Length: 271
Image 1 (cartoon, rainbow, N blue to C red):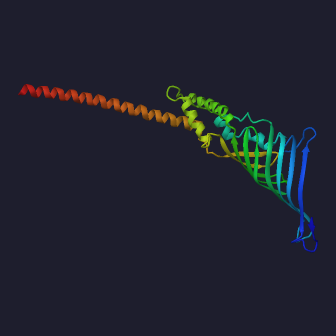
Image 2 (image 1 turned 180 degrees about the vertical axis):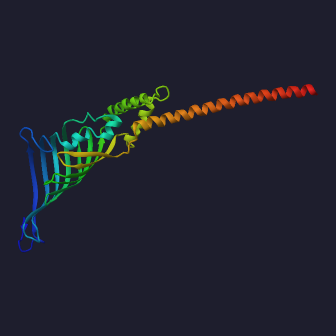
Image 3 (image 1 turned 30 degrees about the vertical axis):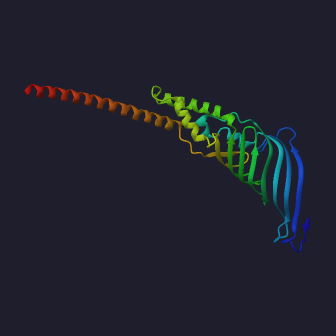
């Protein structure tokens, strides 16, 4: 600890090194989470006073680590299950569990005057790896967060199955069953979701409040299933038209050959 009331600009800090565990007893009735059991390690610096006013106005800079943790009913993660853009594309992410369990998560935290800023956040579960950064106000509960989510490869199959169901509905609605194959369109749709390694990679922006977050997908930019079906139908139309044109060309060429043959026979008779 280094505190000097006469020289707070230079001597106004408390080193923090804390290892602790926090657990709810039962479920929380209000708020952004129902229950939690989290192990925490905190390494950082606390500045208790504002150097100018000399009043207590703590500023915290720290790295938070969590060797283990479980959260139940975290509203942001609940919203991730039913993002509108995703639901229309491949259905709800029902495989995401109500309990978020992790090992070895960490984030850099800065706090002052009710504002919490998070940077370089990382958390990994059996279902996904998540990077996050942003801020929240503990007084208003307002939140602004960017999330990058890389889903475990085991989820590719149910996601593709969800895409195929929506594609099939789109094909039937357009009455293109005879011309468009579900599997071909589903393969194309799946490529829009995956990175170069074949894993589903999604980027979200979170706004609103911690209790009522608004989660939007910002990347990738997904085409509508209807547009994918139309594109596939357009390709088939071009192929059909090309075949028809070639067929007409063959008929014309055949008729021209017959005409030439008749003309040649007539010329022979003249001589």
